[in-house]
Amino acid sequence: MISIAKPLIGDEEKQAVLEVLDSGMLAQGPRVKAFEEAFAAMCGVQYAIATSSGTTALHVALLAHGIGPGDEVITSPFTFIASANSILFTGAKPVFVDIDPATFNLDPALLEAAITPHTKAIMPVHLFGLLADMDAIQGIADKHGLVIIEDACQSHGAGLRGKRAGAFGTGTFSLYPTKNITSAEGGMITTDDGRIAENCQVIRQHGMRRRYYHDELGFNFRMTDIHAAIGLAQLQKLERFNAQRRANAQFMSAHLRGVTVPYVPEGYTHVFHQYTIRVGGGKRDALLEHLKVNGIGTGVYYPVPIHQQTYYTQALGYHQTLPEAEKAAEEVLSLPVHPALSQDDLNTIVNTINAFMEAA
Image (cartoon, rainbow, N blue to C red; front, side, top):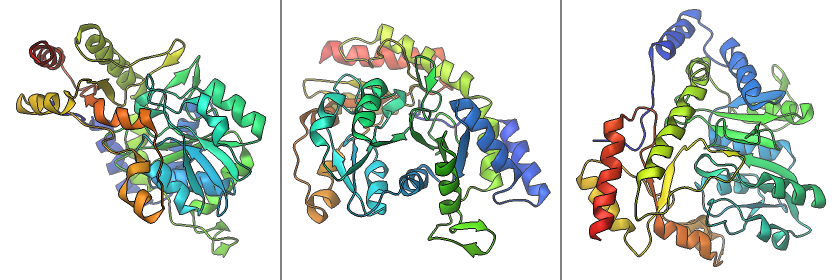
């Protein structure tokens, strides 16, 4: 079986965990601080704040900017539901704008029409490892005085002309096991704003600036030193992992036939958290089953856009038509691209798909 994802955990991660266990300092200790500093350096920002998950990173980042009831945050309907749910957690309202069919990211041409007097922020999602069009999004945000919260949960190390995800606004990352690097579970917030960094630190730790002095409502969204030890060891491998993902993606894009391969705009560094093809003509599900029978793991990310999810339509009353997101949900298929793939694995994936598409 060729798996759709495979966390690569080596001796370095295991030894790092044992050292933490032996130290007796298990929660929010020196490994967390070291991980934050190394992650900030990787992104090219001054501050990084570790949290318990990518979802809590999003939640804390929004709260740190004062986003709450009565506010609106523009985001993508074609993403994991945590992107929009984190907005709901603050009491604010997600406003969905359709995607660019080539990149699967927010279409900047549609943003200004969605801005109202209640709009407080734009949350672009750097989906599958490719940055959104941050030049255009930044220009619109600046023009209207809006905050940018980057959902970079799938884009560790991705870039645009040398500037990395997490450095365009307040960045948020997930460290879930299937991501480009993992801490087993965890999240990270990045920023160049010292005030926002402090707000994040206070919110993630029960509203405390001093121990047992609670200045505001906060949460227990801290990262443990065990998780940070894994993440720190993984971070040292990120460049190698991403280079292998790009090489695997390049091979598949050069050899696949009959499907639409991922688009990488000029100047962008795609890190291929997912290698997502489009399969038109109503053949996606049949190809998925064919790959499954042949021992090749796949994923459909995402089969239902958020604005069509039951909670959003029935509980919240969303009734939008976003044609590009809806079409993408019917056509996308993610293939294995992780660094553990062998050349034989890549050949098998390509040959199996090409044979199916030629016969279909």
